[in-house]
Length: 374
Image (cartoon, rainbow, N blue to C red; front, side, top):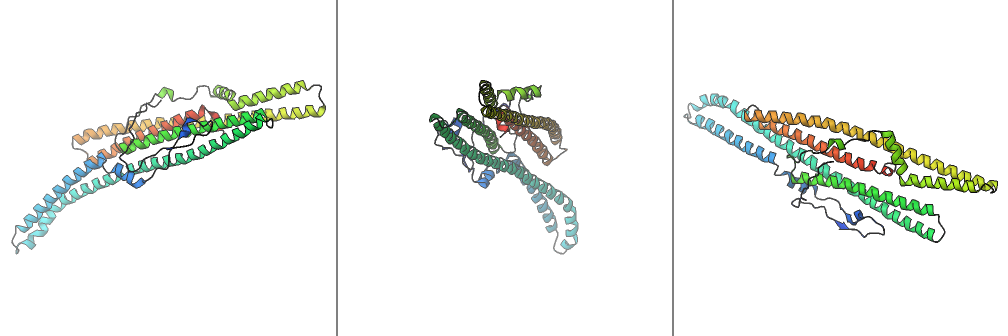
């Protein structure tokens, strides 16, 4: 499992993710008692979170130092030109400017490179933040839709219960409504898990954008798929409430058919059709679940391969950063090169953490296969 670290909610940013109470309908899960409204004020939040990035501060200091050197160099050049009298000055000015042109051009190039590095780091930080903000907003919309679906299922369950109590509806209809409500609630819980992961990522980025945010720590042995997929699929399908309900219905219809041995032909034919229909629905339900489970397992396997590839990229990025750090201390490379290496490490770490979050969400859905078949 990912070893989650607790990060304090950032109150200094220009937007806040507020919480509004929702009237709890009968039977509504606890997760419905909080709602997250839309996240607002993108530009202010992103600007505030990125204006004091450590990388930008160090580059600012380096740029100021280089500009001071540039000013000293141009002042010395002008002083040498002005040291000649007006008669001699036109003859020596061109030679003096040519002598100083190389060092001045080199300093300007270094300054421009650092300004480019600043823009690149800030752009990367803003892209991370905006991407996370949009993901949170999309999940909030999905949760609103899911909450509405839960409310509809609660109303449907109430109506089915009333019909059943009055003798106007079958018990199976009431149980089906209960099961549908349970599925909607679990789906809503899954969305809140995804939202929690994305909000944690957003808060972390807002607190420390584009620095060494976190170390990727997880137990690789737990990020594994079941060894016997076929046996796993059969076991999971058998234990699903809706499959069990269909099995019970088939068993009941078989008993009704056996008990109707002396009934009229038309009645027996009707019971046979009901039994065939129930068996067909049960088999179709099992096939749909199996297809959804196997599709999810394949997606998770691909994600694990992706994580392995990202881990290799992270190791390479760390090795390159360490090499550049030693070379920087020896004066063989520039701070610009070191900033690029640091950015590569952070991108690889963020990619692994994001993929792992997705993996655990997919694992939760795999443990509740009816979510996959919806």
